[in-house]
Length: 302
Image (cartoon, rainbow, N blue to C red; front, side):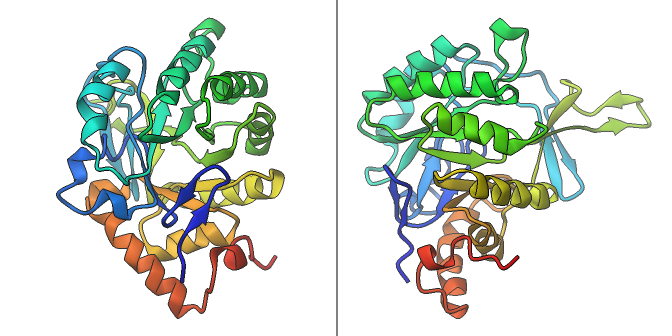
């Protein structure tokens, strides 16, 4: 079976992409497999200036998942371009994840990445707080979703633009349509669900930030439902994210309409997960008699 996936302006070798924030800048995982064998890598969120992130502790294990409040720690775009990007192997499909707290900064970042030949596409993290709107996350207001997407699209040149949707909304399809209206070429979902964890002995929160983002197998049913809804609501490719650990999980997301998937928290359990899944997905698809992704995608019987 040909595992190639066509996302419009972006073609992947297979549907396996690493999720931003769980795979570093890619270089950290080169000892575990060949980056060029993957559909793509979505690098850690990058901002204009370096960020130290939130105070410790900022990761807590939960039942079937984990909470994180890293705070988008990163080295900033200048250091990424100078110290990381040149060393990612040629032939790797690299998706830059953009983090900013204003529409203008998103545009500036997009313009910088538009000039980088090794960057294949841009992913917008709209779960960021908009400092000019009292800290409300971009992804919780359809008008802001459309505005930031439009800004990035204008500055991205020929780079396809992917918008990463937050699940922390009343109706994710409203945000999906807003992103498409703003010019999004594709959508990825879901980002983490807001949660918290407390310690009854110390009577304190386990995260210094109090709340964090829940990820891992615990959120898969929510992610699967939202991907299904969004795939029905828009005509652009959808990338599924949320609790994916096995080849069966991958095929479930494609069955409900996803073109590709991103693997995140599973990488913390086994750093070679994404590399193994490429072959395991191929084997499982063949055993089920799937001849093409176009034939299988969205074929759920309801």
